[in-house]
Length: 265
Image 1 (cartoon, helix red, strand yellow):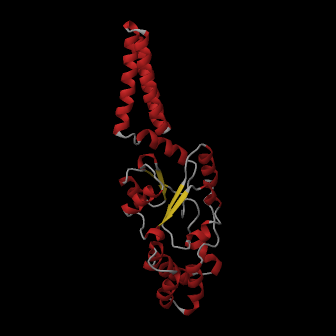
Image 2 (cartoon, helix red, strand yellow; image 1 turned 90 degrees about the vertical axis):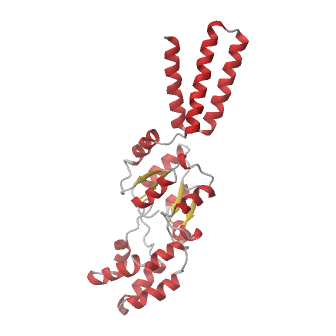
Image 3 (cartoon, rainbow, N blue to C red; image 1 turned 180 degrees about the vertical axis):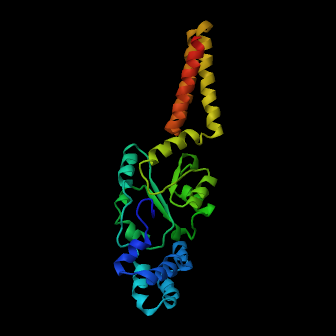
């Protein structure tokens, strides 16, 4: 979520308190880079406990700013430029969109203010399951919750280690650097380099062989035998295309073209 869909920028949040110099550094280190911040995202402490631990470490002049940032860092909510339009385009093409985010329990409060939230088909927040990316279990929990197949998922995150975690779970992964225009191309490249499971490759070959047999039958088999073989191929093709994405179907189409050329030769 942060720095993919909306900006997570401590410098931006601290601006509203007019912090400068050493004060800014203290808040950055003791609030945003603290163990307590991570524990909030893991869901093992709440904001009140975080304040009790963090505020005594700061000079009194910073207590108000620290408390305000812990309780409501999300002011303002700034969208990542171009991401809303990209997600709208993906949604229009029939893609499902999900959120998997390291965030504290109050995430739903500010998430509802983000325009992109309305496009999501579901969300899993780290604090809800007491797990943090890149723990492998959070990816498995996410996939199970929404009944997703990892080989059909593209995971986008601004942190390389989180993307690595997704790769280990057989998802595709893209490290996002606040640059939206290259994303569609990156997704397309993944699709061609990516995962058509072995079993489905066998299915593609099987359908191709049926079509080849059909072509062979056409030279000397009776009409009823030929029609039966064609129906077998059609049933296999229908079952395959109903459960596969566009990449596999394109690959299958290419296979058909190659077989057709070979048969005509």
